[in-house]
Image: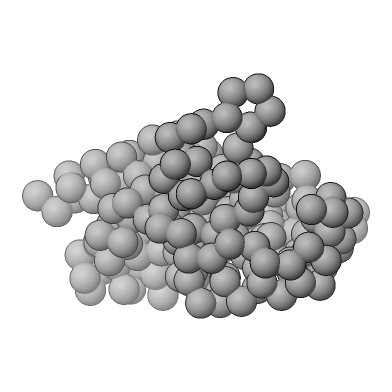
Amino acid sequence: MASSAWSNAGVVEATKKIVPIMVDCTSNPPRDLMNKYGVKGFPTVLFLDHEGKQVQTLNGRSADAVKQQIEAVAASHTFRLFPEGSLEDAKASAKEANKLIVVAFFAEEDEKLAKKHMALKAGLLMHPKTKELIPRMVWVKRPLEEGEGKERKVTEEASSLKVKKAPTLVVMTADGKVLKKITSGKKLYKTLAKLADKHSK
């Protein structure tokens, strides 16, 4: 596969719609994964849903083909875990349904933070029970910064919650009480599920 395809600007932009996971197969290939997905040679690119079920294998090698397939798979098999919206609307929804709110402060336009955003999202998207957790909480994505160039700064909303870096998840009650701030995808599902369980009691 032409490595140049993955450095193509269009492909790089398209990969923001998925969570890329690289598996090192140079010295000790993971035979269990290879057997599970029927991988017989390298490189092989598989598309999996958030439950780990294979939905497609990469077909083309050109940048255009890679970009088109990524976008098609993303459109067909992904769901919006962090929909954009206002915090006030999220609070209203949480109050009505007696749920906690998960506010995602992202800076997805910052290429330097791309891996951190992907790692955090993977903490949820790769867990088999994420679909069960989603309806138990109200999810909303908010910008960390606003403005352009030298005028760019952390939003008042983020500052009021003492959020200074992205990605950060803020778990709060409908009345705005902050219960937890999370900056890593490690044990993310377990942490959120535990908070949801405690709130529902």
